[in-house]
Amino acid sequence: MQGKKRRLNRIIRKGRTLIVPMDHGITSGPIQGLEEPDRIIEKIKGYVDAIILHKGIAKHSRLIAGFEGGLIIHLSGSTSLGDPNDKRLVSSVEGAIRLGGDAVSVHVNVGSPTEGRQLEILGRVSEVCDSWGIPLLAMMYPRGEGINERDIRNVKHAVRVGYELGADIIKTNFTGSIDSFIEVTENCPVPIVVAGGSKISDKELLAEVKSAILAGASGAAIGRNVFQHSRPDLIVKSLNKIIHEDFEVESAEEILYEGDVVVNRK
Image (cartoon, rainbow, N blue to C red; front, side):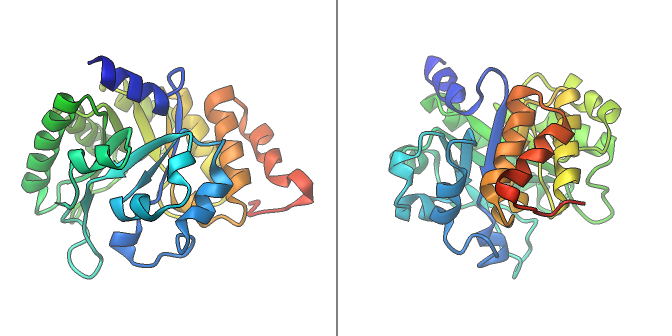
């Protein structure tokens, strides 16, 4: 699968990657920070390895044609007006290729009432991706009534499902510590990136990503904590230094004060 390897190399550089998902609008509606996606793309280009977009944003963007990072087209969706955990297929691998996508992504909530249908989607999409040589990023979350989304057993199970059904990269929740996340990475031979999740302080975010890297993660996929940041350019620069240059948290945090700008320090 030479084509898949070449495309993966656009997203994962020397085993590490920083991805910014911007696929939140279908679930949440006009979410703060993504009113103009091109404005965020303009600010973060040069510091991120890939972005995740739904097909409509990719199709209408003024910047995608010249964006030098990897383009990942998200194929599944649901809305908060219905059941947000019921992810359905809303795009195709072939459509992503026509848009110039380097990879595709799907979201699976393991433990939700519609888990079975979502697993069928993941399995089918992985086979189509293999036939076209397109990498597949699977967003694998333990999510459902009464399920602890950061519990080590649940995260390990969700990640293992993604690996066994053919994902090339897996995005999942950080389990809270280096020791616990080592158990996740040791049981998954494909690259794992940690999700950014809900909005947290910069220091918490940088520390979490640093811990994930030390535990064997290949990087991070950070959405809200980038596009809702007062300085998206500086936070991705800080994350880039941790992921690609092994900066310590304190050194990476100092980047947030370039030009005497103080942002979200806690």
